[in-house]
Image: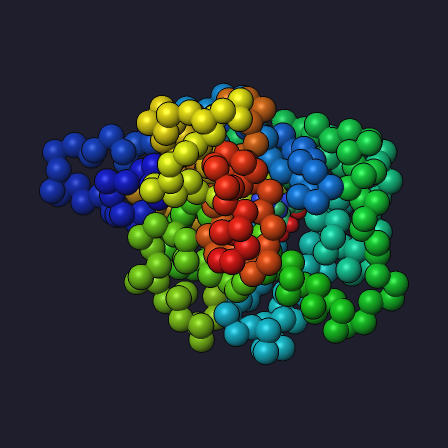
Amino acid sequence: MASTSGSTPDEVFDASKHAKAPPRFYISAPQDAPAVRVGLVSPTIGYGLFAARDFAKDEFIFHEAPMMTALFNEKFAADQTLVQSQVAAYRAALASHPATAVAFPVPAARFGIAPPAFDRAAAVLASGELGRNLAHGRFAGSTVTRDQYDAYVAGIKAVEKPSEADARDACLDFFKHYAFEVGGRGAGSGVAAAAAAASSFSASASSSSSSSSCPASSASVTREACIYLLGSLINHCCTVPASSSGFLGSSGKRSSSSSLSGTEQGPNCCWRIGPSGLAHFVKPRHICVQARRAIREGEQLTWDYGKREKGFVCECDTCRGSFVGGLGQICAIL
Ligand SMILES: C[S@@+](CC[C@H](N)C(=O)[O-])C[C@H]1O[C@@H](n2cnc3c(N)ncnc32)[C@H](O)[C@@H]1O
């Protein structure tokens, strides 16, 4: 992870070699203070998470247990056992958490469940249900308005009497776009598994130093993948290429690229899954979200998903004209 470089993500502090642990091993858990709100970004992007207070660079924002866990293998599409594990996990999540269908209305619709009317959805969004799996950091409610919600769900139609094949395909897409692979040494600035538009599960593909020795990079290894009620709602933002020049400032005027570095633009968060020297308080399978730079209250939390699916039209701030020419075309061909 770029913001915490200086140690490998899973470096273990060996007390016998040091009189005193270096300060980076003492980064504390996220505060039990308001951390995030959910909001609707646009009818095409859907929900996103927004900072509920200011965060300092490197501060941990929240730490969350998974909503559901299922088996994963890069070749899982051809493996009915794995797909059935996902469908069973999703059905269980739908049955046990009312927030599941509200937070993820598109996969729910493909399982035959229509998005609830605004009043019911708003009650769930405001109730704290979405924050039920938080271990640290508090869910601070929703900014979703009736008009925003109605515009979003207008395009989501429930499939009538979905077949088992429909359910399997829906689940496959849900995991492909929302899940994080765990069991390896997950950490990075992007969505681990596949998120938004990744063409395949590639949990470690965008991770900092974790991919090379991680067996997850073997397509034949079966691992677990987790979907998180809040962590899986974080949207993608393209990393600003280090070589880029010709920044346009927020006014739309060209600004000196020296005044804004790549990490001050682009994604503002990174993640890690499971404990490590820097996040020793994180439990296995839990996701911990960390600020890559200072974040102001109200700013949308984003990270870089890594690989993008061919044809993905990126609507992130980096692509929407922050650069001369934009990066949208680059996203589409990755
Ligand atoms: C992990 S989910 C994020 C939560 C999602 N916005 C939602 O409401 O379910 C990934 C999906 O969000 C959308 N998305 C995320 N970032 C995007 C971006 N930069 N441009 C366009 N769509 C994006 C895509 O539909 C993608 O498949």
